Image 1 (tube, rainbow over the protein chains, first blue to last red):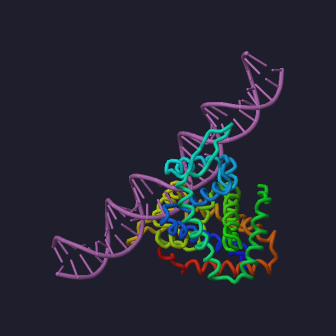
Image 2: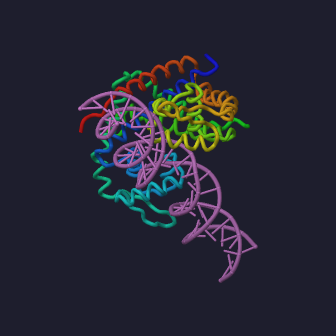
Image 3: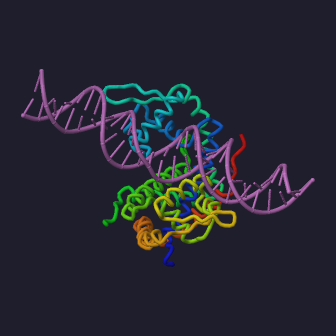
Length: 148
Length: 148
DNA sequence: AATTATCAGTTGACTAGTCAAGTGATAGAG
DNA sequence: CTCTATCACTTGACTAGTCAACTGATAATT
């Protein structure tokens, strides 16, 4: 391995380029439903766990409280979600409009996402990849910064 | 596989969470050098290919022309790069300040990046992962959107 | 009951990016 | 020699996010 690259750093580069590219294409794809990738992710998360509050939602999306606050303002303005001031938190739920869009967009997006993998890797390879990535991801959750 | 998930979509989710988390930790890590991940990436790219113009740089980073323009304005303001109006394009190069920061930050960042992988996967597994991800990434470059 | 924590959410100032319309200089066609 | 393309870059309006300081309401302490 040279001074400038390691196997890990090469994997990293590919990973970043791939996720970037897919994110971009997903945005393109979801345009037909009037959604962005970020909005879609948020709506799916809400649909799965509604009713839930903003803190819960933020942690599920690995986004900060401030970030979710801004996102929800936009989604509410566009009529996709409702927020009711509950006991002490704001409970979030989907509007019928969002349910309707998701009923169409979700299966389409699932198929699109999946095609990236099914078109290049065998089922066996996908299982291997899933296992490796799962270990990486889990590890990254426990990892802390090296001291200065 | 259920109606709600496919192997591909599960891999995707892990991938996104992992790259997110790493990106975030890298930001944290690079703070000690006064750099963000995005800035670091741009500077490394410039160092490798300088002198180069903005279009070339943008394509190497999979970012739009507009995006690179804004980024370079910030980097120039902070004294990391210089842009000279050349024959018909602006040629970008690093300032001594940036060279000095990179001389420290690059090896550190390489080691940090690499540790994510070395701490979880064997060399054999990393090779497998690299191969699978490379195929995915290459495929994503050729893939086009399904028609409406 | 009055005071102070604590907790959920918001907001200001910022980075980083997108798209699409707009500059400004150079190069080629009439 | 002027006119028009073209090319590199910039900019306006926007999404999406960060951090840290700030509200506002409820809960806990003296």
